[in-house]
Image 1 (cartoon, rainbow, N blue to C red):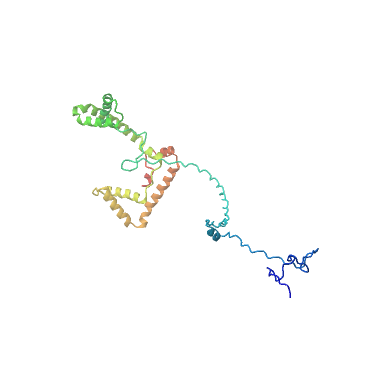
Image 2 (image 1 turned 90 degrees about the vertical axis):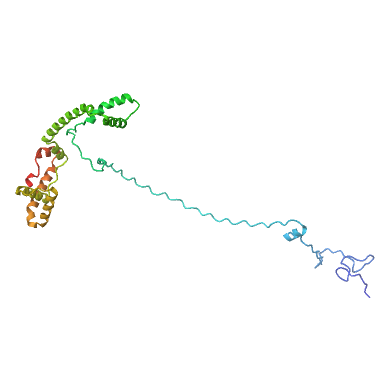
Length: 290
């Protein structure tokens, strides 16, 4: 009967190389110089790995660490295209300054002022003008602080209204003398052809039209016939009605005279101011056309 051995961890036999005390024989360990074939290695005991997750930290009582967020991927920055410089503009040629024509002077009512001939005599001064000259000298002495003409003129007009006829007599005499001198100078200016020369210097007068030539002849015929004198307005109405009723063939002589007047106008316009004054003189340049 075989010997009974206590059951070991691996088999019914005692572990290899270990004998019971006092036993010898086949179960005794033998010295081996070479490694045994297919040795039986003990299986290692299972060791549980420590929990490193958030659940394990909660069990231990530690505050769970927040998982690290992955860094967001940066969007590629788009480079702005470089601004193109605008092409240089060519410098425009400098324009020559245009000479501004002076605006015509207007009256208080808005009408154009008539140009005056510098050679024409000035109007005579009135009695109030002579009185105001004397009053200004006294006003400057009594009111040295007041400057300007307005206050002096107002005070002078008020003083002039209070003057008696005897006090105004010396000033009125001076005004009468000045008026006589003005009338003499005006007669000499007109007789020398001053107004006509002043007009011709600016340009020749406009030529008469065919109707205007007919109107002048109509007035002459009416005056010579001994008809009752009427106003200029009524004569113009009668002449206009007759001109409209006239046949085209009867208007031809007046149109021919108007064409002659226009030719004379163009000749005078081509002349200088001095030549025009000498050529026309005191006469009407279109008298032969009427």
